[in-house]
Image (cartoon, rainbow, N blue to C red; front, side):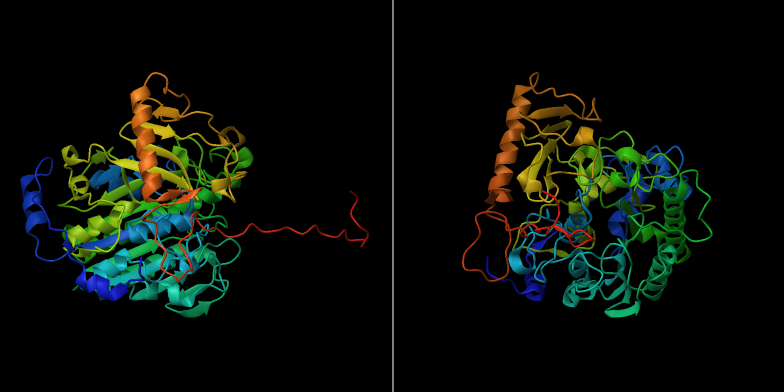
Length: 512
């Protein structure tokens, strides 16, 4: 594929997604308002880091108090089959581009663990900006290199469609350096203040731009790894510091909703709350589901495993969408949906152009947001990649784990996966079929009883390998924008690190 001219594509894109009339479960008054509102809607996406499916009250948390998220669900819609990616960076790439991370182009044509998003990829911010939206990002970016220093400044949000950035380049593994646009304003900032400050800045931006449509993206630093909370919340949760962090996030979600209502914009704003992957189980005692006050990782609730896994606990995330008068209150959507769907859905709602020179994996799910569940795509499939390895596929109630080694080469550096519990570090000698409606914990294969389902899902997997690729092949529609002598035949991944043996402190050679 020739290197596209990013902004020209946005102007000349020819696929126009038109809005449709709303019928079904929404009251007639809400339908009329949603269909006939002249002003384009506002969008707010709140994206937490490593928050598990079971870490919200309305998703079953027994010990973390989330009254504002619970009320948000009561006033809006809870998604119980919503998917992200297994790891932080890929999830952000998927949300921004509407594409599986395997598909998107990266700088240097290398498939990194955390994608270095190529400047010629088109983000949801750029799609909306072309329609006159004010766009801003508040929090963790993680698409310009997984590092707090030495990252690519020209790939920060302000070069990827956002008018304004207040946040940090990547995860807070050791420190968080705070930037305003491209200026470092606080090296090693106080992490206890970040949740509140991101929210303060987001509210200020919305107030400043309330007379025009806005897209506000709030990818919180927490609850990733080095946890901290402000004095107002620290020490008050039954779930220890992890619970403190979630309860502070909950409070600040409420502040966003209150601000939208105070500005009188609630009838024309969609607010989405979701997480980037499942809980980070290495932060819990014995890799268990987070439940102890001393555990610094989350809970997947009824789901199996956690972050860095293609079991449901690694990729199915708690998701709530709020939009009074548009999103029917007190509803639950069980249909398959994902962060891939954000770009095409927001584009459709804003009457914006979807990029037409490339494949977009997500779909417009306005019908789900508006309660028209009978219009859900009946044969929609979701594909589970870990790194460059296709490991599973879901369609309807069926999920098929594809045959794989216990330590698959395509998942490197997570082949020997220390992030999840030993019981989940498994391979499959033959296809392992799960009926998710009756076995949410993925305990038992029903492949022998459903051979036609297995064959159908294997065929879907083979089709996806041809299109997108797998660890041993490059799909025909995997994107590479940087010049190269020839198109690679296998996904180009970084060379493994060679660890040199350390010399003993005495200076004597180590014993063999």
